[in-house]
Amino acid sequence: MRLENSMTTADKVLKAVKKKLVGVKKYSGTVYPYKNGRENGYSILVHDMGEYFPCVSRRVFFSENRKSDDIVVYPVEEQTWQDTLSDQAYEDRVYFRYNQVQTAANYIVRFLTSRRKKK
Image 1 (cartoon, helix red, strand yellow):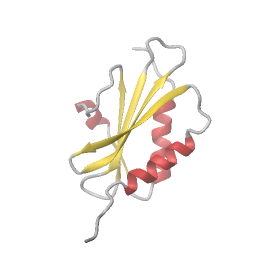
Image 2: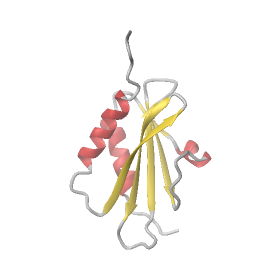
Image 3: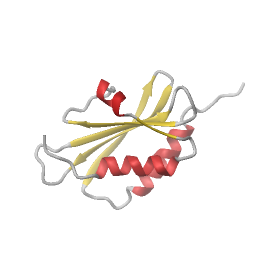
Image 4: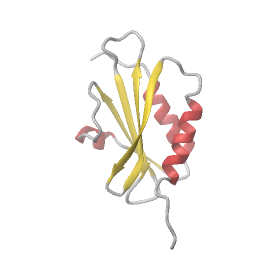
């Protein structure tokens, strides 16, 4: 029997994101598993511990796309910590070719650490 690992792409992206976030101390973040149908990956929830109160949060979900080998990223700016994707997250999703792991990781890091507005 041959077992396929559906997390291979997500594992590569997560490793690249972690490497890029080394030394960034302003943010507190947590990695969670993510599953949506045939999409298996991770979500990263980051709290901006800077000047805003209550803290502003961003969450990004990423996995291998269910219909191809490409990487799909769902960016979510939120005040609540939901575990599911909203309609807005589906509208805002971004695709990267399967071999663009570094490009996807750069996008994720930029999204999670960019200057945010207080809502």
